[in-house]
Length: 249
Image (cartoon, rainbow, N blue to C red; front, side):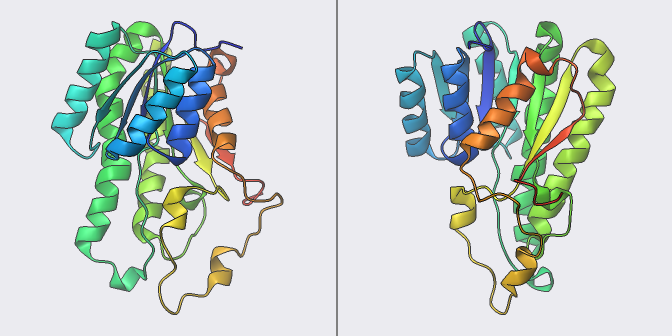
């Protein structure tokens, strides 16, 4: 099934986890890919795997919190491929900690990548997506939809991503641009495995709503992103699609 044949897709956060899984999934569906991440080694590995599937791939090391770097990335994608059809924002960072011990610097750092970065990529891409009749798929989180302790910065950023996505969907829907988001939960990714709960945290609060399913790998989120970004979802706009095994059912 080549749903993305003749489509140019930009994916941020492509070096690992959901971003890498999405790149591989869309490569298998015929996409021409523009990949970015701050992790140069991981990005090169993702690119090589996608190219082995026959995809045409360009990649660049980009910090999405940098306006100049995002402007250059999107302009470079259009210059290289002549168009932009789908944008998938996955780049994000996470930090656990007690809210009353969270520094302003840490709060702003996570907001700058997760929320501001998503905004910048969307802002720069929208004119090109309007020309191509394209769409946006952002990555929110179940942390945006219900209380998730010790993730004040992350939860706030992902709540912002959800609101940003729905705003774009309404603002540009009549012009032919769709915008949706996935809200992953109970997904095994490097971003979760790198951090531990803070000292004194009651882990039962994090898992107080247990998934009806087992924890899954990032490929299940990639499948949802593939659907939302494809013409199969032509009548889906402004949706925050939970991919969480029933965690918030």
